[in-house]
Image (cartoon, rainbow, N blue to C red):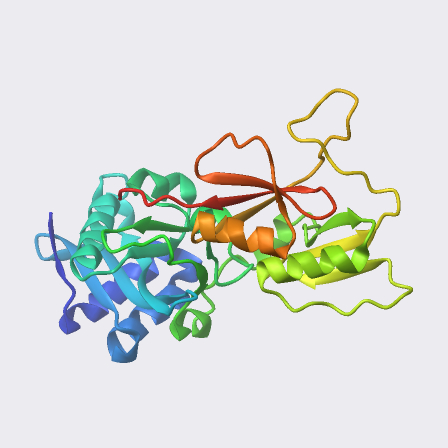
Amino acid sequence: MEIREQRAEDLDEVLALTRLTFGDEGDEVAAIVRLQVEEPVYGSRGWIALDGDRIIGHVALTDGWIDAVRRLVSVPVLSPLTVHPQHQGSGIGGALIAYAVAAADAAGAPAVVLEGDPGYYSRHGFEATVDRGVLRPSTAIPEAAFQWVRLTAYEPWMRGRFVYPDLFWRCGAVGLRDQRAARATGVEVTTVTLGARDLLGLAQFYARLLGLPVPSVEPEDDWVSIGGGEGWSLAIQLEPNQERATWPAAAGEQHMQIHLEIRADDLLAAQEHALACGATLASVQPQDDVRVMFDPEGHPFCLWVEEAQGN
C-alpha cells in the first residue's frame, strides 16, 4: 500500500469510493469531498491510499478554529475518513489517520479534531475535547464523539468553542439528527443552583468572580440566574436557613452536598482574585494545583489549573 497526497485528477475516483463506502449517506459525504477540492477557501488537504493504481482509502483535513480568549486558533478537522469495504479492518484507516496527523503536526497545527466513534478513534490517540475545555460546535454532536489529538504546538490556553468551517453545515454533516432524537431522554442539566441567606450578595460574588454581568434583583425575588457558558448557568436561590458547610466533613456538622470546579489560567492570581471578591481560603489544601475556597455563604469551591502535559 502507498499513501500519497490527493491530486485534482483523483477526484472522480475518490468520489466513487466515497459513495460506495458510505451507502445511503454517500452523496452527502461526496459533496463534502467535492467542496474540499473545488473551493480553496476551506484550506483542505487530502491523501489517498493506493493498492497498485487503485484508490482504496482517502482522508482529508479542512481548516476549523477554536474560538479561544486570546485569539482564533486554526485547527484542522479530519473528515471524511474512507476505506474501501473490501479493505476495512486491515489497518488502512489507521495509516491514513497517522499520515494526516503527522502532516498537521509538521505544518504547526496544535491539534487535529474530528467527529466520530470514540471506540475507534481512541485507539489512534484521540480523546474527548471537552476534557480540555474545547466545546463541540453543535449540541447535535455527542460530547464523547467530538475528539482531538493534541500536537507539538498545543498550549493549555487553547480552549473555547470549536467553529466548524461552513462546508460541513452546507452539506448537513454535523452531528446526529434522527439518531439523536431516537436516543434522547428528553432531559438535560441546565443550571446549578446554590442556596444563600443573602441572595444579592452571593449573586454579586459569583458575578465578580467569573467576570459575568451582575444581575438585577428585585425585593420579591427568591431566585436569580447569573448566566454562564453555552448550555449551562449558575443561579442563586434564597434560603433563609442556609448553613455554612464544614470541609473536610466532620461528624455532626453541615456537610457540603455540591461544589463548583472553576478552572484558572494562573492559580495564585485566581486565588487572590477570589479573596478580593470575598472568598476565604480553606485551612486544608490537599493538592498543590488546586485551591479549596469558600464563598461568602460557606459553599466550597475549587480553583484548579491545568498543568502542561506532553503530547
